[in-house]
Image (cartoon, rainbow, N blue to C red; front, top):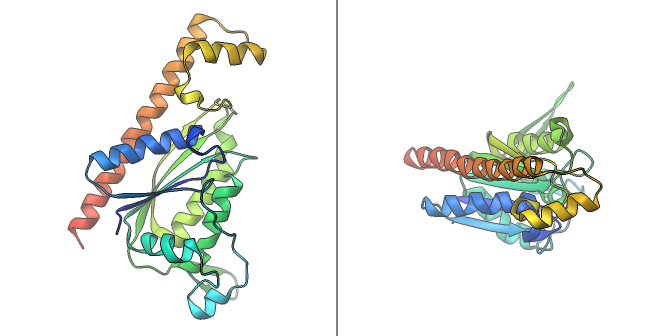
Length: 231
């Protein structure tokens, strides 16, 4: 089985800025000796949750598909989860949201008079890293996406959100890896008044964000190493 489940929720696939951050983290985890199962929601057909709640009685999803046969067994045994997504309307992408919703089968639900209590079904807790990319500059813009990741972590993983890395002001495809010439052209067409200092500052911020993705992976690797030593 795998140590880590890494999921890209960008409809742009490998060209998405959030996927670029995810790829950096996956590469670093692999360098540190951890095994990673990578899943691209843009390339993998995973049906959304049907909301039938049959899993409440049976503990098994009625959809006998790739998620049930492959993803869920990997999730059950792994020690960490990576989620990446662009921020759309303050939330994660439709692709990642559909993926997260399927984990209803991994949650124990107890209905009480005043509340509903949700706990993970699987005993092995998993810490989570989140990687977001957004065109907006404001930090508040990804608040809904972060809430979705926190709910997934609490309900299905039983661990902690170890780190959240956000690339801001990156509406352009592959903007985190774009060169100076293409960046200047895009901003000029968009009507942005640019100068050398502004471009330099932007490119520096991209490198800082990618570095934070690498350090987040190292933080997760440390957490997994501790967990594996105590099993």
